[in-house]
Structure formats: C-alpha cells, structure tokens
Image (cartoon, rainbow, N blue to C red):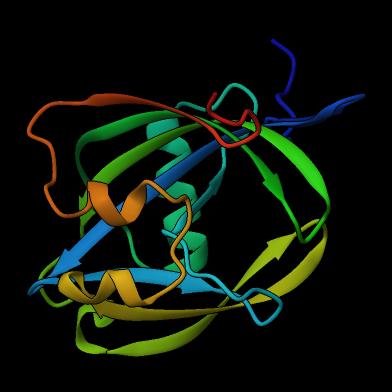
Length: 173
C-alpha cells in the first residue's frame, strides 16, 4: 500500500475555491470558545481543513490539538453546512462543505481555566498566530462571527444533526 500524503482537501478552480472544513463548538458555563487572527476583523470556531482521506472526526481531533493543544472528546455532529460565500481578504469565492461538531475536553483542561489566550498554527508553511477567547452566548450579536448563520444557530444547539445550505453569492429575488 502506498503512503498517503497529508494534503488539505481544498482546491482552486477557474471560478473560485472548494474547501472541506471541520469545526468545533466548545461550550463552558454559558460561553463559547472562538478564534481570530491578527489579520482578521472577525471571529470563528476552532477547526480547519480536512486532509485527503481523513474523516471529519479525525480532521477535527488533529486541528483542535494543533490549535489549542488539547485532546478533544467529540460528542456529536451538529451541522453539515454547504456554504457559498465571498472571502474579501483574498477576493475569492468559496464553495465550502463543513462539519460542525459539539466537543469538550477533560474537566481539568487548561483551556477551561483561561478566559483568553494565544496559540499558533502552521498554515501554508507559515506559522500563524491565533487568539482565542470565551464569549458569552448571549453577547454574540455584538461580535463579528462567521459564518453568518452561527449567531442564530448557537442560540439553540440541535439535538439531531441539521443540514444547512447557505449561498451568499446569489442574491435573493
């Protein structure tokens, strides 16, 4: 059997970029953990791109350990999201398939003891600084959180997996 190369499931086409993403909903005492980077003016859920031939759960475990330095316990899949949007920072249209999981850590995990902190992640062969912070769920309307459906979706965590289709590239008629 040939050795599998670790490569993100993300590729460019002549009309945009396809991306296969995984993300984690991490809750603590009425708060949610979000990330941002120095170059961005928005917050997002921890996670990242799945590698080729990697399951969404494997990808999420790897991404969370890379970003937060903690081994996650995956509870369940919350949302499967087809998201089509324009990313202004790279002036690129994206068609993204994303799997959002509810996860937690051991009760004594360091991440639960900090209100905010700094981490790093390697992206495109460069180290990226990540800032993480716990935000009260009832205050999400005051921050720039992406994707746009997340503010409303986090008000009520589903008991069963939901399929969401978002197309911000096509204007409603």
